[in-house]
Image (cartoon, rainbow, N blue to C red; front, side):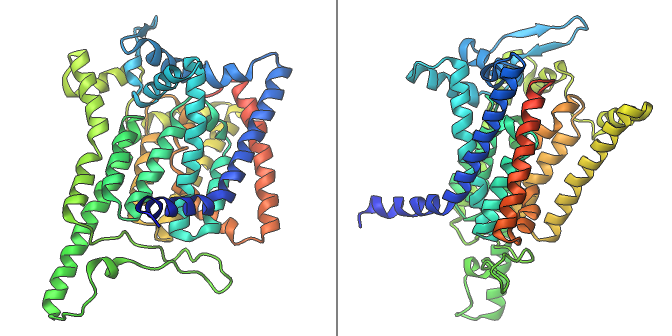
Amino acid sequence: MTDLETRVAPRFALLRRAAPALLGYAAVRVLDLLVLAVWSAARGKSAHTLLTARWDALWYTRVAELGYGYEVRLPNGDVHSNLAFFPLLPWLERLVHALTPLSYADAGLVVSVVASLAAAWGIFAVADHVYGRRAGVCAVLLWAVLPVGIVQSMAYSESLFTALAAWSLYAVLTGRWVGAGLLAAFAGLTRPVGLAVVAAVWTAGIASFVRDRRAAVADGARGDEHAPDAASAVRAPRVVTTDGAPDATRAPSIPSGAPVARRALGMLLAPLGAAAYVLWVGHHTGKGPLGYLDVQAGWRNGFDGGYAFARFVADKFTSFPSALAGLGLIVGVGLVIWLYVIGVRQRQPLPLLVYTGVVTALALCASSYFGSKPRLLLPAFPLLLPLALALARLRTSRAVLVTAGVAVASAVYGAFWLNGSGPP
C-alpha cells in the first residue's frame, strides 16, 4: 500500500461507518424541502426565495457581492451594518460564484447544503467516538429533525459553523491539535460564537498539559521505569453494556502525550480567525478593538446575562393567549438546561461540555432577537447526546418509528415557520 493510500484509507473507512447517518440525514433534508415546496406553492410563495433571499441570507449575499460597508439607518436611530456578519460564508459564496454560473444567493445555498452534510458527518464522528456508532447515527438524526432544522438548508451560516465546530471538537478528542486549532480559527471567521470552539480547544489543551505534568510527577515519585506513558494513562476505552448499547457513564478521555509544540500551536491558531476579524472591524470603524461591540449595539444585540430575555418571557404572561407561549419558552429553556446537566452527569468529555456551555450561554443571554434563540442553539449539538443515547437503546423498529414521526412533524413546522415569521 502506498503512503497516499495509507493516509486516505482511514478517511474512507470513517465515511463508510457514517454512511447510515448521512443517508438518514439526507432523507430528512429532502423531506423538509418537499414539504416546504408544497406548502409554499399552496400559499403562492417561492420556496427557493425563502431559502436564499430573505433575512440574514440577503446580508450575506450583499457582502459576497459588494463587500463590507453597507448599512441601514432605521427611523429610531439604530444602524444595521453588514459588519455584524462574519466573512467566511460570503467568501465561500464569492468563490462558488466565480467557479460556477450560480448566482451569489444560489452559491450560498450550495455552500449551506454541502456544509450541512459535513456537519452531520462531524456530529456522527464525535458521537461515535464518545458513545459508539448507534448513538452517532441517532445524534445525527436528532439534529436533522430539530423543529428549526430547516435552517440547515438555508443560505445561513449555522450549518457551516456547526461543521467546523464538530470537526474541531473531533480533532481535539482524537489528539489532532493543529487540525483542531485550524478548524477553530475558521469557525471564528464564521460566527461570533466561534469563541465557544476556541474555549473548548484551550480548555482541552490546558487539561492535557496538567495531566502530563501530573503523570510525570507520579512516574518520578514511583521510579517505575515500566509505568505507562501519559497517552495510555488517560485513554479510556469505549464501554458498552452487555446488550451492546453504549454506556453513558464512561466516555473516552482526551488523548494526551502529543508533542508539546503541536498542542501549543493548535491553541495559538484557535483564536486567530475571530481575533483577526474583530480587530479588522475595529480598524475599519476607527473605534479600536471594541469596535465590533458597537456594530452589534447598532443591531441592539448584546450580552446582558439573560435579563432582557427574562423580561420578554415575563411579558408573555400579561394575557392568556400569549401566556401559553411564555410557558412554552420556560419549558424549552428548562429542557436545554436539563439536557446540559444530564451531559455533565454522563461525563461527556470536557471540550464538549465547555463548547456547549458557551454556545448555550451566548444564545440564551443575548439581549435581543428572542425569536432567533432556537436557531442560535442549532450548533449546540452535544445537548442531543443524552437523547441519542436513549434512542439508541430502543429497538431498531421503534427508533425508526419515533424518528420518522418527529421528522414529519419537523418538516411541517419548518414549512409553516418559513412561510410565516421565519427566522429573524
